[in-house]
Image (cartoon, rainbow over all chains, first blue to last red; front, side):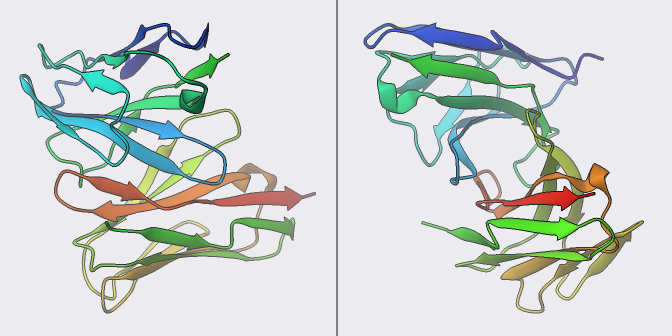
Length: 113
Length: 109
């Protein structure tokens, strides 16, 4: 099992550009989530999904969109990148709920110029 | 919204000294999880506590969940250089999990 796979590992964007961060898991987990990590602020929940076709907002959803067309994939879209979105992004999954142990991907380090 | 705070934010210890990080929630938690993130890495699940007053041990690590289920602590006995990293607690609702701000541990050999 590969676990949770995130691509790309690094990305530099210009302000206003859009892009999609990819996340895939091969553990047949129902719950998937996206977090951003900024210095001194821990991990903040952006969006989460409890199964294919179901998504909901987390703590900091503005500027991001998600979809969950399959159990395996949970892409995160930046619609119009802003410097404030410079961060490290982690995707995670757990068996059914957010209260169960989450498995994290290696992260995407994103810089917005 | 729910807030989960951790103290201290940073801790430097000499190798062999003990270390404790504290996690405090603004609301009662149904359970609490602890994660460790090595420098440049991703968070890795350590343990989950569910019951009021629960204490669990993993080798040199001792985890406690408060009686009111609003606080928790992680204690490391006789730290080693392999303990370096940031320790996060996490708790909250059934679907929305709130992570603490983390405690960064540096161990001086």
